Length: 242
Image (tube, rainbow, N blue to C red; front, side):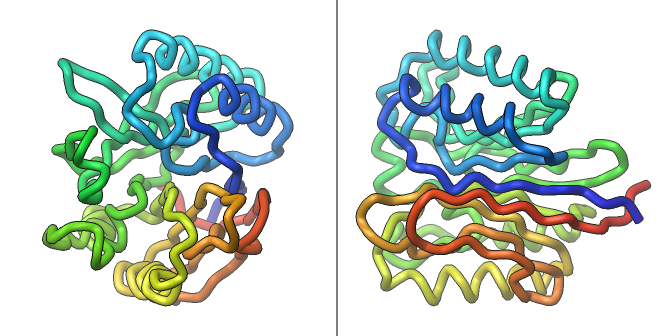
């Protein structure tokens, strides 16, 4: 068994890279962990109005920061390819290399006004550990967010050998979703017998409707952040690596 330290950054996400990038770089530089998880679109802001060229320059700075800190970071960002916009998680290793990307596969109805769904669910491997990345609605496919079928992506990842899911969210403060989000995280971790490390974007408008933290394969929270304010959690996860 190897011990993997995971940190999740529940941070306020501004509408543009100018205010988000420096904060992301500071978190990477100042944390002692193996994997650092950031919220959905924490780099570009939750919108489709970002510059593709300036976003690519920001990715280079993040890669360099990961290399200096020996941290693997899962960054929430927007990406523009061939005239299409996607919501994406990008994985930069402690060597400063891009391990891979995962696009949001089940965008909400409001998301789809400016972004396209991704097409492929990926499993990543690093140092013998297998994991997947899901983005907000990918995991819980919430009622009221569009009439889309639930592809049970967490179950698919578990069937494909993932031991942990890194889940990036930006779900807001509508409390009608709080119980649904919590029970979904717990049951999906339990169903697939894997860990889910989740982090939400902080809000200045009240408590979040989904917590940041780590849920174990038994469906119980191992660590959980307060729902209000900015916080960073850390958790030492013992996991079998090949």
